[in-house]
Length: 178
Figure 1 (cartoon, rainbow, N blue to C red):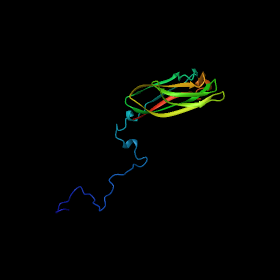
Figure 2: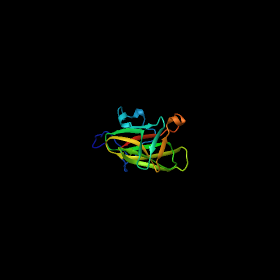
Figure 3: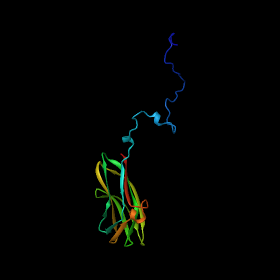
Figure 4: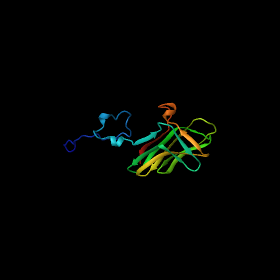
């Protein structure tokens, strides 16, 4: 009461201020029913991704003079703004000269990253490479290429080597945003 008048709304006044809002949200407290309709849209949650995997093995004539493209290991990506993109490639190959083999991921004819392996024996060898890169807005063509220290052929395995679901060569990407 102030001067005989009851003030409203009534609020507790303390000598020490208390937190008006928690600093964290307890796990499991945000559920479907607590979100407003339309608060989270598929556009906000959707991540752009894509890639390509070899269905059939491909043999490439490779040499030290430059990176030879693997024709069916190419995929396009369209970015509406500069974005960070996670790109990875893995698989198996066989090189007939038992020497250095370098596989590289290219975007628009520029190398983004590569891996080099020294092959001292015959047989199938696996490779794996991953990199997060920033690409400008626009359409980009990602592709896998191979170079060897000595001229020869490199065979990249498709599903026809060991069967579906085995170890096909793949080139994939995931757009992470800006």
